[in-house]
Length: 195
Image (tube, rainbow, N blue to C red; front, side, top):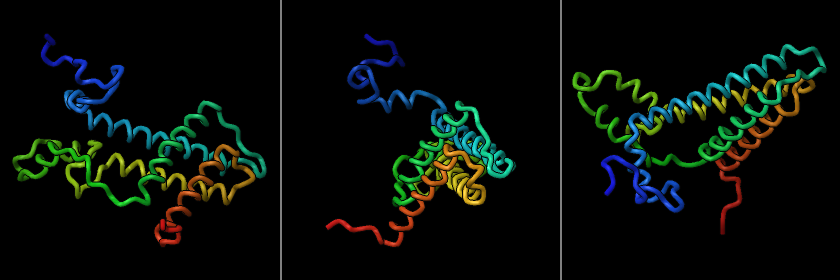
């Protein structure tokens, strides 16, 4: 007999991994959607901060001399750029999928303003899942916009200061340009259509 509230084997998939009733396990963790949102904000802001530092160093470098950066910082920046860039590439050309909403938050927002819990706007701002199918997920929105703005700025800095831009930083500019070209091609229907 299992204790009330414990995680049993039926809540886990094969080999004890997530699966089966894993959603019921996640639903037992209070504030998980907010925690996910905070982590995504942190990753997005860290990405913007690191690349902001890189751009400032590139712009202020003496002509023809690329600045050197700590390998760990470059690796962290590359990892964040890879994840955010992949998310950007996946979502920029796809239609919006209304699946995955925070129904509890949606019900709270639907109440008259005087009956809502205090701080519901803060809950909405930090919740990874949106409150409804017609509402945005702010952490996801900030992540996508942060990537687009930072990558655009890096591309401009690279274009204006190519001799001072280290190869590791050029990678983000080139990858972003590829995403934009792919998006524009898709948006205008230029891509080959399946037969």
